[in-house]
Image (cartoon, rainbow, N blue to C red; front, side):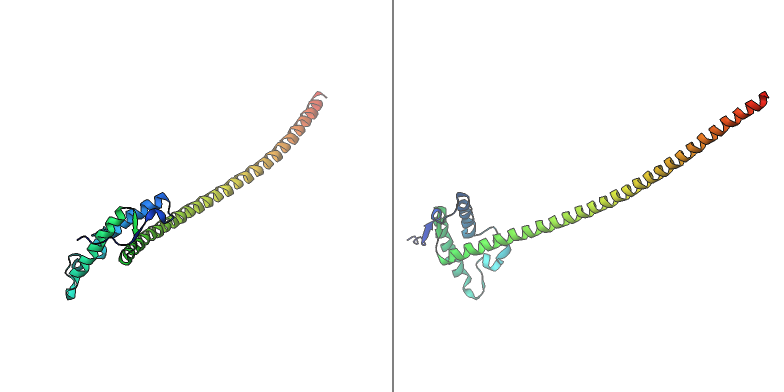
Length: 178
């Protein structure tokens, strides 16, 4: 005689979006499967093979398996199983999933921080290089200004020397004619 289906409600009546209902169905199927994909990392080999100590392991395994089987068929029909055990398993599954998501968020946050720090250092180095080049450019401009000032002085002196030479030649030419 098949066991009666555990109490359940249609998952479409939970106030979830279509995407959320789809996600709930996927995770309910994963959580209530006889051997979930995460079982290899969280279940000991004694529990996995039904040889738990004190002679009670096989009873638990068969009860859990029976509950998972009937809950799985209810979940396959788009219903959220209201059995306390099934809800507990589903809750634990979501805790693990959320833990993995949080670990990934933490990892990505750390990577973002490292990348930002690296870019900040690189930018600071670039800014320091740019500041050094600006200072060098300003020094070159200062030297050019000094040279232009010297050039103006030399040109002024040259003009004065030309003027004196012209006068001397003029005086020399007048004296030479006399």
